[in-house]
Image 1 (cartoon, rainbow, N blue to C red):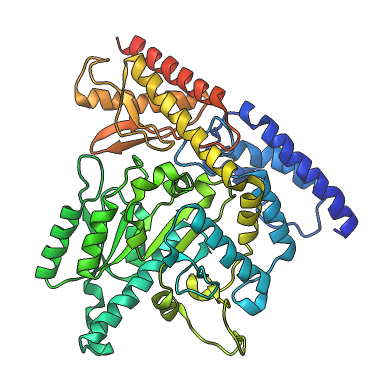
Image 2: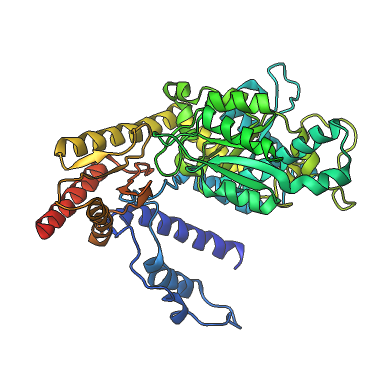
Amino acid sequence: MDVNEFKKRGKEIIDFIADYYENVDNMPPMSSVKPGYLYSLIPHEAPEEPESFENIQQDIETKIMPGMMHWQSSNFFGWYPSSGSFPAMLGDMVSSMFSIIGFNWICSPAATELETVVMDWLGKLIGLDSRFMAIKEDGTEGNGGGVIQGTASEAHIVVMIAAREMAVDRLKSYGMNSNDIDMIRHTLVAYFSDQTHSAGQKATSIIGCQARIIPSDANFRLTKCALQAAITKDRQDGLIPFFVCATFGTTNTAAIDDLYGIADVADSEHLWLHIDAAYAGAALTCPEFRPLARGIDRAHSFNFNAHKWMLTNFDCSALWVADSTHLVNALNIEREYLPKIKGATDFVKDYRNWELPLGRRFRALKLWFVMRMYGASGIRAYIRKHVKEAKWLEAQLLEDGRFEIMAPVVFGLVVFRVKSGIIAGSACDVNKTNVELVRRINNDGRVFLVGTNIRGVHVLRPNIGSTYGTSENTALLLLVIKECTTSIIAEYS
């Protein structure tokens, strides 16, 4: 493919993408293919000779498209959103044009410095404390800063490694040597609630420490008292607490942990406090939500996914640390093929020391495009629209009388179920009813959502978060919920 053909095919792909977005709401959001469908449709070896663009395009439409879950459909209400946007796509295209491997400043100064600047922009937009900024108000370099990770799961691992480094330094200050510390690394304990994302527990498996899962309270929150009690017991058992994850917007119910109380415990017990706001962190662009996050200024690290609810195509997970010292010390490995700049090094960040991979894409570009083309006002309007729609859905479900809301509706998530008593039977029968309701809604094909289980209770959890969705899509969701509920009641009665 030469430049002229690239221009031609590139325009065709843009048209194909635009056509997809114009028509995606007319497709069932959920794929209906069976496992292994694609294996029988494509060759089992790579082609020996080049194939035409037309053949590849045809295969996308006839073989790939049927197996896609349409996350960008306005009728997709599953999990949490993957909110792409046209500005982010354009930024991704420019990033692909450069195709850099940006492991340090020398590789592409603009890639490093734009990420530093844009992460400060984003940190200020969500109201983070100045400790998390890379550049101080006086224009000098700070100890903190932001870095774009691939996912919140990667962020969990990275900050847990930094937390371990901080704990080791503390043990050394008590007079322990490296050999002694190596013997007790397995006694390090990280703390989570039973509602924390699985990424936290996975991180403990990777770095080789223990995970303590603490029961959440009646509102699905990790509390100060429960955390303190768990730490006290572990210290009595000879273990070494070193890390705690608090969540701003849990996966199951969008609950908010007792951030300020947890910060009190982290301070007194010398724990690294990480706040996982993967979904709900985007809401902090709106000042009215910031009182809910009281205590984040006291954290060691904070993370949210701009690719979930802030219009930025996957992957773009924003992580900030208040002090990068332990992070860089833990992840920095020098090699002769990794040259360092000589002379003044202000504002020179080697982001390879802030993440797991060595190579990294120019992800700051798409975030830069989004923040410039939407502006802060556009991003806030986007968030508020979804919250308003979620509140409307909550009100409509309650007005119907057959449903109950199972968790406070604060952001775009609505957790509900068919009430006990609507269909005669035991609690087990009520659970079966709600499981069946999820199945029927998705089999209907007009919308897609998922259910979950909270303490033995089966619920539905549609999330309002589509980039280009309108109130008509939320109304369609409500209609399908009601129709499928009516059919179940009629059948069971």
